[in-house]
Image (cartoon, rainbow, N blue to C red; front, side, top):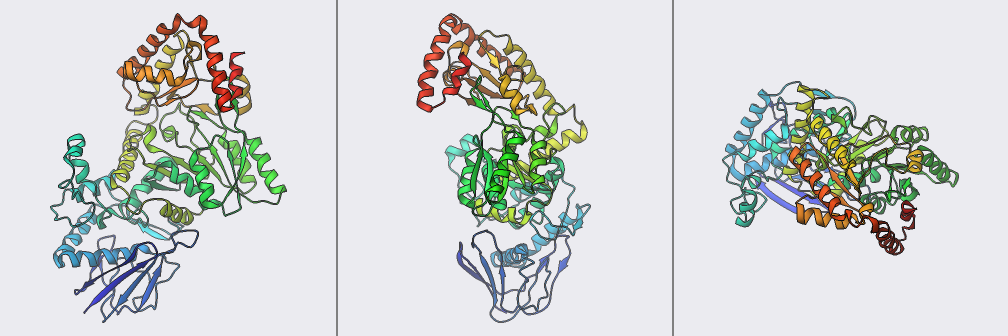
Length: 575
């Protein structure tokens, strides 16, 4: 028989190949399933976007044959696959098996079947859910005994003795630049693999990625979790696009991340800004109050508009948390979903003295940059959802629009590994004895020492502007953020950043006009803290002689800066 599969998509173009052998496919539980029957002209349409970006996968049989799907839900003799099924994974599985045959015949397919059978022997607790899955479909997800299923699958694929004729072009390191292998070694290239059948598909997850995301959702207290390879940026964008139609209002604070602005451009949402609580002493903005959100929603509704969602930032870059629970109550009273930019709070789940998470306080969506304080690679993040206010299917479609079609498995597996690391800690040690405890203790010791250094202030509840603290009703401050005020030394944060980095080898996270912010994590050592304290002591001693002139210097310096940037409110700290 002659079987031709043609892929026709609006974004991919045409690709075809011929396969002269009958295809057999293995189901996800290891059982071989072959469905007899001739494949009639059929089209599977998979809507991946909100605005008409709809790829069409067309399967055409030229002269008869069998259709063999590992997880078929429609009869082989149906005229077309049900659009309600939207089972892109079915077509993908079929396509993968045909590729295996085309590349090397039955031997490759037998190798795959053996790998699937070996995997099924280690599987436990397979379950099926009849409720809406994280992709909006009813599906079966297989759980494995591995503490990090995606990491294990990536290692297994990298260890295969394979003649690789797939992307990327460095061919598992064989063709990589020596400049880079000298820098990072060959191992990253060996594990830099494409979407092989054994590695699942991020946008139609049914296997190891689906299981890794399910385990992450369980740990972080979500109903569903999505792994992100474009940082929290794409998570914020997807959350807004999934909740706001063109013309809907998005209520958000003025100190929002740029991803929120681009999200409104992509979705067609209209901004309704609320002014965050300003701290004139530190020259920063904190969170927003529930009363402000209530007033904004009511104002939009009185004008005949529709509020698609409310977006708040908690914690801020400086670690200040808002009263998310009160804001969530307001939002849900009006039937509006609450989205929380929790990029800086992925670690809150893992230590008793850390602030409560956004999900614990009733948020519908929380987007976290797992790489910021936890152990995943830069650019990796997670989107967590709970409840039914936001469609999981819409979120999945939006994420597929926003992220690359070639996601890095190094990034994805780093998310799985970071989750496994924190799972192991909480399971074996429990809260109060986790690796985050050491980080909190080190940060506390550093703050205690810095409070005693002349000319320095440390951002905490005692030093926040009293008016701002009263207005914002602080829900807490992340103890792992150390923000040091420098204005009494006559220095800007930018000046101090250069001195500490170039002369003392101490690298801060965020310099600003009045302060310098440092981040403590599980990877911070006691030696790091000693160097931080020592460098700031030296900085203070160097500028102590100028302390009598620092007020005048600060006033003149800040006056010029504030005139340029229209930030006159910052001068009030000098009064």
